[in-house]
Length: 79
Image (tube, rainbow, N blue to C red; front, side, top):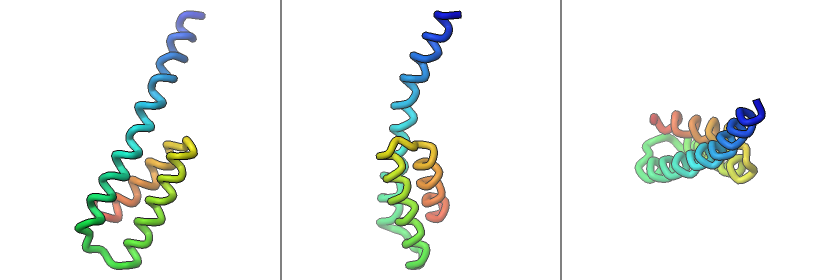
C-alpha cells in the first residue's frame, strides 16, 4: 500500500506541470484568433477580460479556472 501511495503521489506531481502547459497554448490561440476576429467591440472586451482573468489564474496556479476562462473566450471567438 505504501508503494502505491508513493507512486500515485509521484504521478500526480508530474501531471501538474503537464496540465499547466495547456494554459499558454490557449492564450496563444486567443492571440492568433483576435488578429482576425470579426466580433463587435463589446464581445472583444468580454474576450479580453476573460483572457486577463485566465492569465492571472494561470500565474496564481489555478489552472482549472484559467482553462475555464480561456475556453469561454475561445467560445466567444467561435472556436
